[in-house]
Amino acid sequence: ELVKRAQEAGASRWVVASMPENLTYLKYIPYDGYDEKTKVPPESQLMELAERHLPISPDSSYIDAQYIPPLKAGERGGLLITAIEKRIADSYTYFLEIAGLSPIAFELESIAEARAIISTQRDNTDPAVAVLDIGATRSAFLIYDRQSVQLSEALPFSGDMLTELFASSFKLDMQAAEKKKKEIGVNFSSHD
Image (tube, helix red, strand yellow):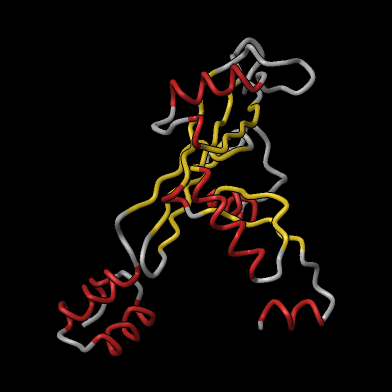
């Protein structure tokens, strides 16, 4: 219904969707043996690199890579390799199509988050940025440096866990604990 109303208002059915961090793999590897035109290795070499560096079978995965230029002259560049199991990506494609949308690309959640909150005006000399996204049921941590996500981790920590901590610490029910959490954040020392 939401998609139908959006399309009636003129929204496109074409989408770029992000994949949950805990279902994807990301690995930066130093690499300078790239194709001069495309900046990434040929597919067969990319599959070999993925097999060596990721805990996932290249045969049952969608794999992509992005070239990361060197920070200084004389240094090696690198590849940011990403992967997701085909069965997972295919199930998201199926779901989006049932909803009336047409996915044209998928990206890692951390890359979408970095693009949304970190300035594109940064250059290779700017310091690295760390982002902690605390969600209701899970959290994600990423480090952005050299114009790309360098590290991405799904964490077994969530906003719901913080609410439970507030409930037990302040002897509150969950609704009151959620309200208290939003009022004072995580600074316990200055509040009763």
